[in-house]
Image (tube, rainbow, N blue to C red; front, side, top):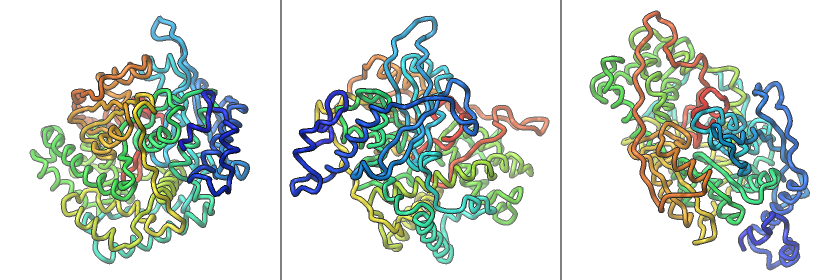
Length: 561
């Protein structure tokens, strides 16, 4: 029985269904208790609503952004048990598209991915030109998912440990280095349970999907309009599978492969392989602009200069804080988004020419963001380890990643180290839900994908498209930036606007030409900061995440943050 059977059109509980399958009954279908608990929580949330008011001073937001909370069960199988509060943000629909008044279409709820990313600043995206038409018709709603920020936050280690000095990032690690990383992974997994308690087992993608339905009800929405990026597409697809009749419109941007056999271990391997291609794209672009950066006329020459920089940083870290690990992490951002290419290339070039300051600015630690980063790492680990069965035998990890590193050395082992705590996770793991909808069960959904996306490889979008009946896939050909909706491609944005504002979609599939390549940035003549480089950039962790890296600040409002 699908969860939708427990709801009427207003999302209220159908009591006869509850009576027909009491908890503990021999006829109780699998997952019934959680579906029943979700219905109860949604009914309560609809009655309570959300009291929006000024955001706290520490959130440092403009007056247009309002904040509130919604209460959800920690464990949906026990809706009367422990509860947690999720923080929610909103900017009301402006109601005006240029000089024209437009009707409000409800709330557009957004999730930027992760797991572990916050969408609290998303509603400010309405200030960006590409989003103003959508902001006219919709209340823009963001939130911090369970575990993130002030939403019952998780922690796995002392945040100060992230400030420890420069690190190595060997593409072909020695046996002694592997043993060290295995020990760290085991300790990290233990730390998650010690610092966050056994409640951490309830931080899962399925519960994120259930939370989304409670949020829908609290917003007073009969049906949900949702946009998820990256990991947000995965639990968005879980929502579509659990609650298809509750979907109004759904945009899945940079879709993660929802195949249960690939969640999450095999998806991680696919990701590492894809990052090698994006790293090659970046090097080819640098080589094209050798006259600006002087890093080589071919991708192979650029790679040699990158290795030179790694060796030099291993011997003497830049600024005492940036070693090979920090360099690799900074360049990983360029593999996520090609708008990072000019500044990353400039920093590498300057460093090799004797000026480490740009590299230290881009790759060095940011103490004011350490607690946020630790929290994001904890949520990422908890959700992915809880979600699926990971290999428990280190020999499996060693075999698979050693083979992969032979053809994709750039990111393979760093990605493995990030996920390795799941091999030693001290709590039960679940079998992933089989994402799938039947014809006519789900309203038409829009899937967006860049053909060379590495964080969410394109095969995932094809699989998502296949599993969600009636979905339409829009592909940005030849591009690889992660999260393309509301960005630099007018063709993609036209499809996004037409769908969200008019409910119209192309027939099954559509293709958009690639966006223009970024322009190179020349070094400043006065030795100061190059034009376009922000004074502070918060970076992602040193391994891939299913999210846009700058998830916690409003520094870049050209895309959801």
